[in-house]
Length: 229
Image (cartoon, rainbow, N blue to C red; front, side, top):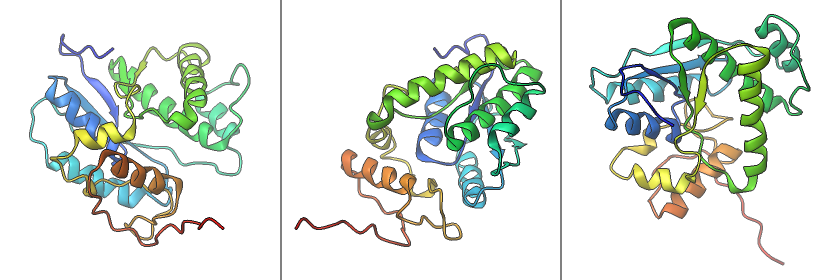
């Protein structure tokens, strides 16, 4: 539940993608005070994401929008689980996530939540939408994040997901009047351009198609669709 009526700010993980950018707009229009947070991990998409984040923030002029907070989280791709344990300052209790991608996401939430806790921000918002093909995994992941923050890490920050019941097509429809193509969502960019074939690009295309919104995004490569025999 979103609650900032008392003037308490909400931290927002802002990646520069469609979901988090539209959530920023949603929070601002509902009267929330927002602290945008970008976590730098030196991944291939960082330059393009930062450009999108800066563009999004410049397009808004609202006294309830705080300045961008950038946090550093160098990823240890060789041993992400050890990275997670080290970030907590002690051994993590319980089983670790199975997939490296999930561990990286947990590190991202932990880093942002620890910063929020230090300045008294008690809610951290994520713009992630519902992925029907990954619904069970999403539930498990966010359950584990809650256990990590409230248990082993001892961080009193609540993760909120206002778009948790929406699919990408719903968020794209919400953003019809915005320049959505200035947002960036690609895990294997070529420079600052969408590659066109990674899972993030596939989900982006799918969101526009299902929403019936013309996608003017420039994709470097077109996905090859196998023809039926």
